[in-house]
Image (cartoon, rainbow, N blue to C red; front, side, top):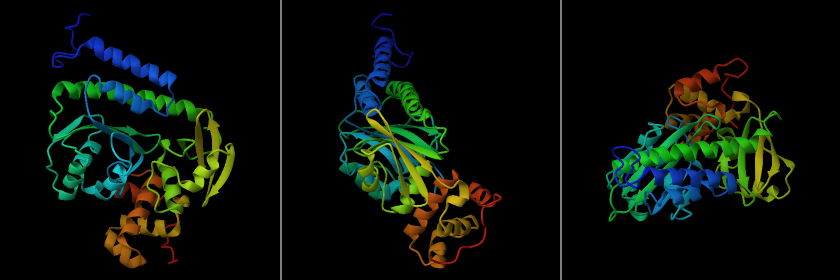
Length: 339
């Protein structure tokens, strides 16, 4: 191949050789560096082909999951508070909704044009004018994996050639990351665990499943993902060990520089707290957040948290699926008394 050979007819200016070298480097990173910095290092290598000043990636609740939230995330040139600032805006962020509803497809946008002005203010604070993103379904976690690249107002928009390169590169990135995770938890899949997580010794999550997220947030409603609660972080250095977490048992197993978290929890609706199950039944029956909040004497925000936990715990993505899961044999359908 000569220097003029391109990835395809539309990717002018970028050689096939350069893209192949980038993918080969990604493979070396997966083999040599381990999961702790794999995605960050991979994206920084990709920036040699498609420059970008900032990026965000991780695992997120999918569409229909009663409220979006990122549960594991990493970032390049963005502040620690980035995800915390975004979470209150998540359900009003049109670009986020668009990319979550089009898995496997690269989605681009430019400008401060979101219908929600608070979303535009957030974008201005973080110099996000041009956006390019892709999401992938992650069935083993019941969450979505996402990668977003950002450019500022005085930089060029992402073009069609960069779109194609980004899509092809992220497919490789996503699969190699999944292989890393699967290799780490494979030895631990025969212990009856219902879900898994992978964390560094400082508590930063590298992978997490939806049911583990629900179990943690049930006991610590203020937990927002990304880093394990301090109660769990304090135990990581003691692995292997087992700790009780509410009604669940959490087994911590060392694996090199990481710790595998294996959740043993009641399955299906049996794992729901009475108030969660009641809120889910009312929601499936057609009641709104405000109506459920009034009936159960809760705040609408608490109702949203309960319903998000129910969606994650039951592995459902719609109100219809929620109703079907609650009607399965062995799951109580009586309204729980008020606590």
